[in-house]
Amino acid sequence: MPRPRMMRKIRFEPGVTYFKPAGVPMAQLEEVTLSFEELEALRLQNIDGLGQDESAKKMAVSQPTFNRVIKEARKKVTEALVNGNAIKIKGGDYKK
Image (cartoon, rainbow, N blue to C red):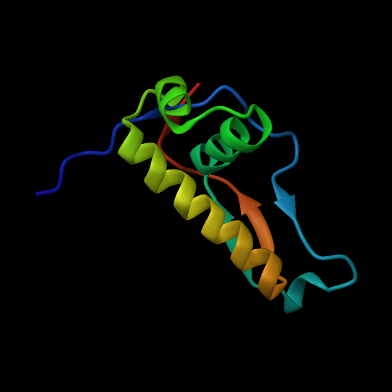
């Protein structure tokens, strides 16, 4: 049986949780779902300019876990931008 996932600590919840390409009807879009902890990881590294160790401490996870979260977040955002997909921000294992 796998170990239960630890709750990741986040300090930011966005007011907007959906992004889509302009001029494309919703019915024609595929979605990429970005979790709140993935968004937090992107925010800590790309906006706050923190390193992985400091970001991991702020999210109350190990550095390898943070690395996996940020890697997956970057993959999802890149996929959405390259393929013209919508980005939906929801869910995840987190606490404020």
